[in-house]
Image (cartoon, rainbow, N blue to C red; front, side, top):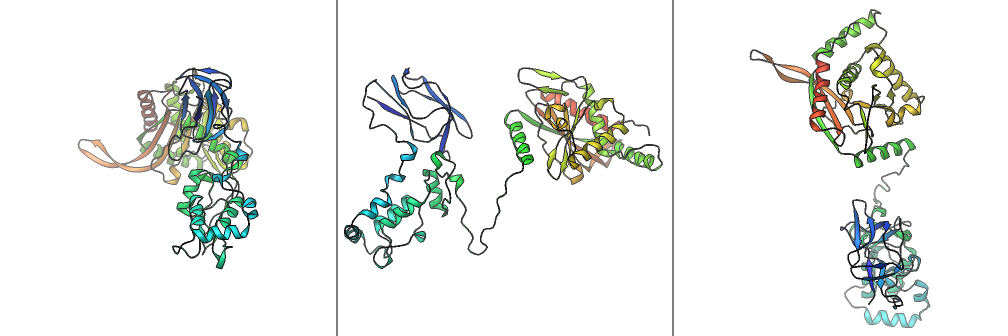
Length: 443
């Protein structure tokens, strides 16, 4: 006896699934327990096994198709078997809840419809017949949105069916949400054959304020950033370690650098961020495991440090790479980092320098905004990224039982655990702190 294999429902919020691989196609002989097809939701991937021995008589969908849950996916049986009772109509032929079309209803004699309505109407509701009420509730149509054409303006079944013809088709979950929240689909949805999914439903308009939102298309830059961030978190094993470094030394050097610039002894406005980047470069030289790209089956070790610097611009976040940063003095590093940032903000930066592959390690500084701690996202295929936080006073043992509040700069290292072990990442982060605390620069 032929049986239908349906698309399973994986979770309450899942309305449809995407077929990723068809392992068995029409005409294939299958054994019980063999994989028929693979599919995925927005959260996970699954495989469906054959419940019986037999032959695949029909496969209603192909690879890449979006299939509503609980829909017939395949029919398994014996060749030549009658499967007409199990066949699924094409999406365009599906009629919402098997409700007769409005045209067919209108074509019925008015006297017959009136008789039916009169027989089924009770004193329970003066304005809508029981049949119309049941149909409206079943299809999540608010009674307030219906115009009655029955006696004395009563809402009859014909009024509900007319509304169904004009409304886009909806998935079962969308109907449930529509009924609970009082929202209705405005246009064809993103589901199969244009069906409205729960995510497509439009929020009701506030009667006092009207439409209180505005939809704007994302810029190409925003789309690229979103795609990159999502891919980074989805395709790597990211973990963040946080550490504070004594900032007294670099604060002292910052004062000296400012004085040296004012006196004309150096041609650069060396900032605290420049010093942190200088410390990072020195630490990377001592930890070659971090100055790498993780490429899945291989790991690429770089002999030079190509430093990426996160730059906030009006068009969005950009991360240009400063090639061969380890060849530069603190003055040269400061000047070239500023040139890169200016090029990004003016839109004149070399696009090749914005590729994640162009840098071997990235620094993102939010300290100027007062951020005390954050988790930066890695620019894959880089193995790690350093987040620089604001400077805060913290208690420190100065020796001989003397404690004092000392300025500390926060450091947040996010690393790809596939590329680096926790111990290696911790030692590298500690090395950055040591480089900051013991920095020696001559001005």
